[in-house]
Amino acid sequence: MTLSLGLMIGGALAAVLGVILLLTRMGTVKLLGGLVLAVIGLGAVGVGYTLDQHSVETYSVVEAIPISTRVDEECYRVTLKSENGVDTWIYVNGNQVMNYQVGNKVTLQKSRLNELREREIE
Image (cartoon, rainbow, N blue to C red; front, side, top):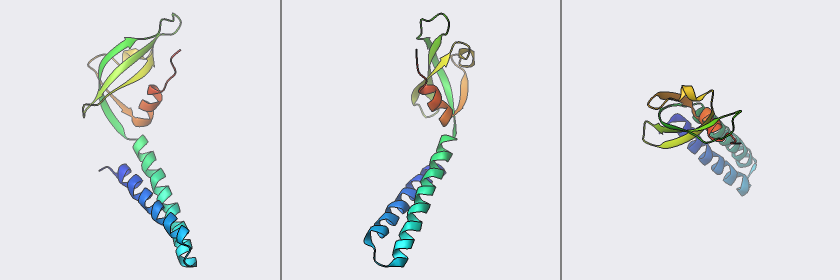
């Protein structure tokens, strides 16, 4: 288990426990303790998510297929395979496709991978 996943799971459990303590309303100490626990838990979830989005993974380029017929801007769908065997794809412009030659290894942060995956195709 990675640190980011552990923080997200632990933070979620702490937040749920804090909310349960808030809902029982059995004394001021439990109310304040529940509030503090819920805030700390949600903070841990946020930190875990941020760490996860900045994690780096290496991919092998499997193929790059042109998918845009526009003359002024070419768009390519690049298929990537991670080291653990999971396939994914990203969309890159014609001037960026040279960085994704078939057989090469590329290293991307998860946030950058998501940005390239969700790029709009015109």
